[in-house]
Image 1: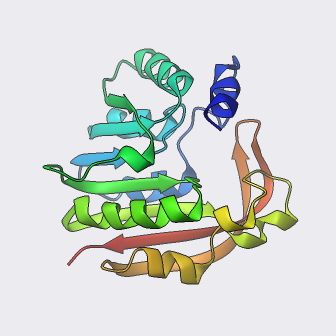
Image 2 (image 1 turned 180 degrees about the vertical axis):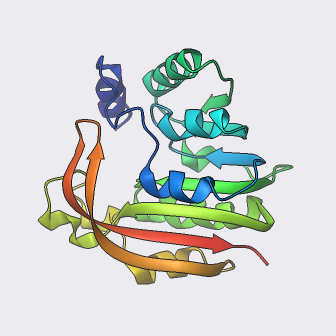
Length: 198
């Protein structure tokens, strides 16, 4: 799987574009800048946008090529950020807290993602936010992107369960028009969530 992503991110063009995810942008623009974590961040479109808005950005991905692309994009926009090469299974919750955690199309095997999502609830600060968008299980009916493995896709019920411990402010599934680089194009079915920690 790592080889697949390294090959994709080694391509000259940005696989999912250089503009931030629309749901991320819409919500991050409403918040005061603080510390943000962006796991499975890929080529850095959201990380660089957040850094441009004054956020203290930490991002990670298991692809070395993803980091290379991110640093290239950050240099173009004259911003700095922290980017680690790391697998979600190795993410540690020790001595770190974030005002916002953003998860966008971060699809993992079910056993990994449930454990990781519980870690996310631990490292978001009280009154902080988790902003989430990923493909719904019905995305298998669309050709606009995402894994072809049903177990790696989401239902509203699964998202609610996996982020238990947070207060959900918004949770919906929705058909949207995707225009993110060459690999997210056309109509898609997503699950979106905004949650906070009491």
